[in-house]
Length: 231
Image (cartoon, rainbow, N blue to C red; front, side, top):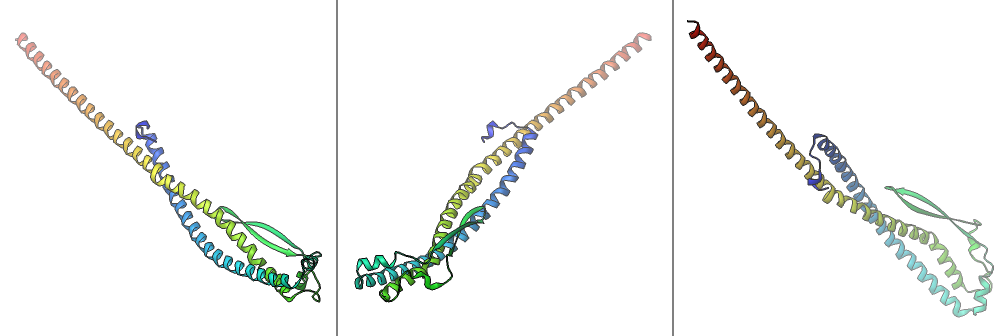
């Protein structure tokens, strides 16, 4: 808001001062929100790094074991081993709020509680390396879900941090300086008008005193003239 476009009245000055006070409070709250989002974002990034390393290590181990199992079994035997799965995983999604940002929560449930149901085949005709591959994948499932949850949360928090940063910068570098400039402009105009009014009042007072003085002199002259005439 350009200062020259502001109506220099006391009502406008009061309105701008209230608006400036609100903008400063909002600026402080947004900065606090940005700082807290950054703190939580950095914590999640560190947790994400550790989880990713763990998940990648688990996947590499599973791939290695599966390659060893496939080298000792035919392709048909491998396909038959996974044709009738005993276990089933259901993903449950929810959300939680972090500084006005809804982020996902991922949990899962299994059809049965028996841990051996992850094996969909009999153990007599399969390689132990295949068992190790299935066990490795089953073991990193919770970390994989947690990793997906944290990575999505980081994306959402990063977007909110950027949005909050733009708002903070707009208040700090545009809106608040413009309002301060407008308030200064109005104050100067009001002071100038007040000085002009005082100057006019002083001139009017001087004119009234001069008129009163001249009127008194005329009255005295008339009185003296009447006195001489009566003598």
